[in-house]
Amino acid sequence: MSAAAPPLHDPTAPMWRAAQIFRLLSFVYAAGFEIASVDELERPVLGWVLFGVLSAWTLACAVAYVQGFGRRPAWVLAEFVVVAGLIWSTHLVASAEWIADNQSWPTTLWATNVTISAAILRGPIFGMLAGCAMMAVYGALKGYVSIDLASNATIIIELAVGLAVGMAAQTARRAHAELERAVRMSAAVAERERLARQVHDGVIQVLALVAKRGREIGGPTTELAVLAGEQERALRRLVSTEEVPGSADTGLVDLRVTLNRFAAERVVVSVPATTVPLAAGVVAEIGAAVGNVLDNVAAHAGPGATAYVLLEDLGDRVIVSVRDDGVGIAPGRLQQAEAEGRMGISQSIVRRLQAVGGTADLTTEVGGGVEWELTVPRGADGQG
Image (tube, rainbow, N blue to C red):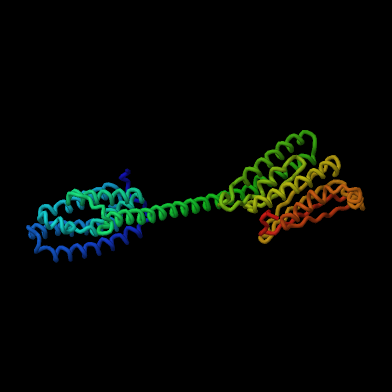
């Protein structure tokens, strides 16, 4: 066991303080028992001397555990040794008959403080082991171990105290660790979002401009435009790959990550700098719908057409717009396709959004390209 000092923010500190209240009450009980039985002892003066030792150790433990410097294995072990020694000293102050008829003069209640200390420090296993060890000392004092639980339930009490207090301390530490983990994650996500905003507003925009102007100028700058476009897409994916806090428990997925995977030379993806968490099922349907739209762009928008994917988080709803600068759709073409039984657009896009409680609206004109607006309410869970 490590002898390191307790953490500055010990989650079990309130338990240590409460344990010292129990220590005070058990000390008062021990004092009352000493006063009541001192005349029956063979060496009453020595009994008072030993009680002085008990009093001094009680005070020392209370200060050590409240201040924190005693919350270590070495101190708890020392407490066990002192308590065991005081229990054994009953042989020095009392007759064998008195020992057979009574508990030890320090009292079993006061000795239970060792069980509590061990349980808070190391959990239920060590707490119960400490309780068993104290009962072993009592057994050695009396020369036997009582198994009559109806008349002597001390061992059950010791085990119960060790188990209950140990589990409470263990739970406090786990809760504190989870809280610290959540705080660290929140700080890390906030920092990454800050950096993502800076990169998005700076480097990514510059790369996008270089790629656009390079294609417009043509000639030798075309290669530069291609490289700038590749780096822009790679950087967009990089700044949007952080996990959604608590995603393992909530089932949330960052929609930006899914959309950024569509980025290509002829597909420009624009997403917010901060996470857009949605249910995994919703993200899957949106991603599939966007994929269908881009397939249609590649197949029907004409050579050289570019698609633009824009993600907007409006708080109560999320909108994904996919438009292209292609040839558009001729009037009546969709109705004709539906009449001929070709329902690809309706089934693959519109119904996907309907399945998650959203809508898909199509706007198009000849020579003006096509625009799909996919809207999903924030509360959608993808179970529709």
